[in-house]
Image 1 (tube, rainbow, N blue to C red):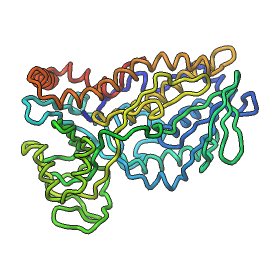
Image 2 (image 1 turned 30 degrees about the vertical axis):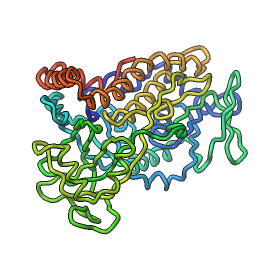
Image 3 (image 1 turned 90 degrees about the vertical axis):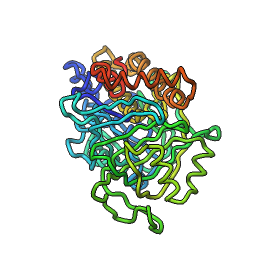
Image 4 (image 1 turned 180 degrees about the horizontal axis):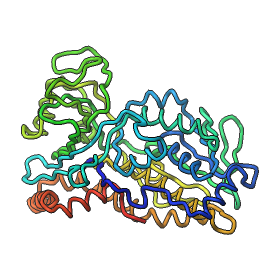
Length: 432
């Protein structure tokens, strides 16, 4: 169930600005107490940048601190799945065509060996694409250029935040150069916490040429070993290594009749390591067998990589004047492409709450965090629960489970209203 969306954004996809709150926010921008700035954003990846840009658009100044040089982020070739709601937020900040993207117009969801399948499509939403994919590096580049052109955002790279100290009326952030930043609020958008255990599962990544698929297709294929997803690529990728039969080569373009896709196969750790070492032809055979002849045949493969799957969720996202967003608050199983989109909804909701708090007598962000925590509770509970349950449900071979999941896939496919509501849930979460 790849990230898809409706054509109309619900309230969470936009930042609503009451006129009085907008005026007060503009008056206070750049003029906080305690010799600091209103907000310190820790983390200069996409979530931190989006949060700073949303706040700047509403008159809030911020200092953005990141330990990594921008060049390091611009070399990151991860692929992000963007829902329609996330696309709307990014386009509101960056404009249309902010980076090369690949449209997601159809999503085929099925379980290997089981009857029933679900087809999510743009036809349910007036022909509007359900989402898109973008390279992490391209998105960071577009967001960084927008932030550098925004007078209310002060970017400090590379600077490492060593820790925070909470005070009654402000928060202090100690940097590795000896400076201490003081602010009314600190936003932790630095990503997942350090690994504390050996991962039990990994995602095996590779880019493939797949026959029979069309531009705009995305696949979610559940196997007993783990979910296998295929996402369309925005541009031709660069490939390392010595080309061989069945391998993609440098500067290769997809061949006629083939689609270039990014594969994410979630597997037990020992199985992922074993498949990393297979010959290209052997892995292509396994992928094609998992997909089945009616979906597609993998014919060429690029360089492989693995990343650990360590889902986590903080129960307390707000700690006095420190709030955790995105992967710092929760990291999800990639089965539904929801992690980044959930983080964007965090950003939008926090910006809304801060804007509304500006209309109060003093505009202290502590009141905003109370509302933020309450509004995000259901979305942050239900979406991670769904993404963690799906792999377990679809890996089971128990007959009642098999019958129930086949019936559920068939019902989603045959009942348009149910299919549309399920898609909206994945795209926009639970309204707060």
